[in-house]
Amino acid sequence: MSNTSSEVNADLDGNPIPQAPEDVDVSVNSPSGSANHPMNADGCPNDGPSVSITNVKGTFVRDNDETVYGQSGVTLSVSVAKGHTLTGTVTYSAKLSQSIIIESAEETVGGSVSYAKTTTVTLGGTWKVPSNQKDGWLALGSKGYSFNWDYGSLNGGCKWHSISHGTAKLPALSPYIAHS
Image (cartoon, rainbow, N blue to C red; front, side, top):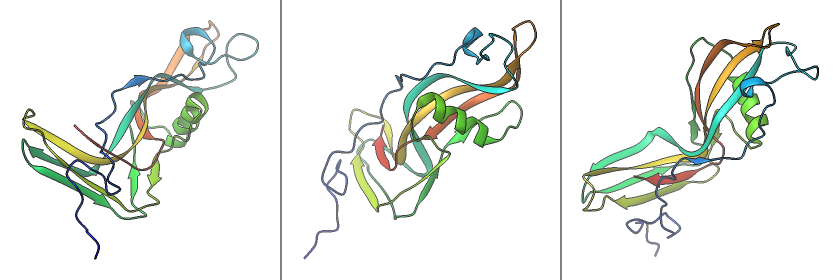
């Protein structure tokens, strides 16, 4: 006879569910050039518009559709089936192809950053909001990266001209369950 319930504060495999990781600095391949913007081999200006990725931090990328909230003492539960897709977020000052931003992020971070990750396993867990917390959350997501991006080019005076900029929070690993 199998036991289908999972232990409080444990993933389906019985291991503890980690608390959401704090943002941490991540080593990245720093672009060369003025103010961290790419330059061509001649020094300036570069051959055309490019994306600069800055302020990269490792973070938990939460799937808002797979997040539950509760108050102190409540046991929260989340689960997803194999094949569930979670997505990241990208903000814009002016619309730009996400693929350009993601490609630049992959090159800068050197990881498997993407806009969407699909779970390859069925995953779930429970967590009880501790009595010393007023409220909390339990979420499916992915470890990933948050960063600022800037799309632009260097003009003839070697000054950066920004065309569009924003932030992004993208998954790199799949899946991951965390709580507050």
